Amino acid sequence: MSELTLTVMRLGFLAVLWLFVIVAVQVIRSDLFGTRVTQRGSRRNAGDTRPQQARQTAAAPPQQRQQPGRQRRGAPTKLVVSEGTLTGTTVALQGQTITLGRAHDSTIVLDDDYASSRHARIYPDRDGQWIVEDLGSTNGTYLDRTRLTTPTPVPLGAPIRIGKTVIELRK
Amino acid sequence: MSVVTNTTTIGAIDAPSRRNTELALMVFAIAISVFAYANVGLAMDGTLPSGMLGYGFGLILLGGVAHLVVRKFAPYADPLLLPLATLLNGLGLVLIWRLDQSERLIATAKSLYGAFTPSAPRQLLYSAVGVALFAAVLFLLKDHRILQRYTYISMVAALVLLILPMFFPGKFGAKIWITIAGFSIQPGEFAKIIIAIFFAGYLMVKRDALALASRRFMGLYLPRGRDLGPILVIWAMSILILVFETDLGTSLLFFGLFVIMLYVATERTSWIVFGLLMSAVGAVGVATFEPHVQQRVDAWLDPFGEKTMAHSDQIAQALMSFGSGGTLGTGLGQGHSDLIGFAANADFILSTVGEELGLAGMMAVLLIYGLIVERGVRTALAARDPFGKLLAIGLSGAFAIQVFVVAGGVMGLIPLTGMTMPFLAAGGSSVIANWALIGILIRISDTARRPAPAPAPSSDAEMTQVVRP
Image 1 (spheres, one colour):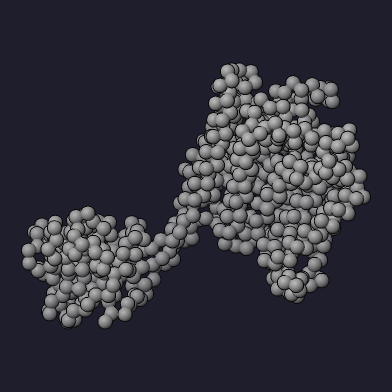
Image 2 (cartoon, helix red, strand yellow):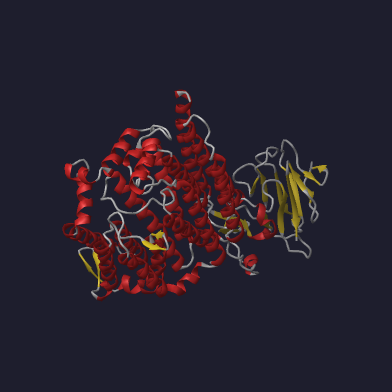
């Protein structure tokens, strides 16, 4: 065996040995699992919730309360994000305006490339009917398949689409 | 003015079982061992060694069986313990085989015993027995808390194991072997596991009395006189072992283990102070009177002195081999650690590591030992029951003390003792007992990391919500 081969093997062995130690330490690092944040309102989707969304929604500042409308029978009680990165997030509907957008002070902070910073808002009118209004967004807000041009009442369960995010009102 | 946003629940993330991580690391560990084997063969003969296939296959078989047993019986166990132990065992086999090739050692063996028997095949056999015991521990011990029932039986068993060697003739100056039907066993290796079980069971019951009933004096909590009883008994026992078996290693392991577990159980620093004082007094006392221990101390203080060299040049040779290894080592199979002669592949195997892999390799090997201890301590932290906590700390503490005592002895930090490097050194009892130790640790870590059953969903969760002003 040539001197060169032996030297390469000698150093190679040390490198491999150290690589093993480093890999082992990496395994220890990935083994330090922390805590998981789940939404109480969406236990069904607990598997795909991410801590990030809780932080975002929790950071939302209090909104101005609108004139509280009478709760009608069959009125929606919560808003559910059914598609997109925030899937599973729910917001209880208690007569407040819900703002949607990338801005940090939105009720639901959208992490969506196609959303504007102040994209849309959802609010109840005097009769307690929930209305969705596009706030001049770049890519538009869709209710079912139609792009919104004026404030439109939201039927129960109809998908409101903002970029890749889909929101529904549910009972 | 209040708005309810959606509320959040914070819970623990389900621990993944991580068996595939373990499998990947096992493959890596075995590949390293086979690479080392090829390395030795190429350096010594210029060809790939003929036995490489056999050893590689044997290691794959052992590692595979161990991994499958863990997958079946301890699916949530720590992913690192098994690969680390496998790597050490594989490296040990390579180093023992490398020393088997040394003509100098063959000649020495022939002149001493008339014949030379290679140690590596025997070591592979012992490793197989060790892995079998490892599998048996995982298979039979479904819950480590069963061991708690045998607290006092294990005390008796450990005492018997520790006292037995006194009645057998000493070998190489220390009475730590018992010989049955031609097999010599080092009972101290097994005693360390059994004694850890006893200490864990005993301290779990007594720790409150030991921790709370104490007086404060000069910043230390001094235990009451009657609570000093157990530590005095253990101290006396370890001194007796030192005197009658002339083995510093077992004595230190035995006493050190008790002090560690006492400290962990009671959180009182005073026990450590007491322990260190008592072991210092004991060691100095015995070293002054016992000639064999005195000799070892002399060899430690002055390894190159005339008096020591006339008796044995082992420590001097070991220190020289560390020195000639330097930072990066001479390369596997190219050192001269066989000059140590007798016990080069047992007590002194670390000097082969130090010479042929250098400081860099030595550090890696010590880190691997450190990682095993770290995983043991992590297991103790994660364990939910106090017995499991104490047992895991005891077993990893015993492992750590053993590594310290042997490595310290070979490197000249403390007087040399008759213990072996876990997994690395040639010796059946050591490798078998340490596989059992790893087995118990894996069992505890499986219990500790197993996800708790999910709490029943409560209907109140929906009702209580955070109200922001």
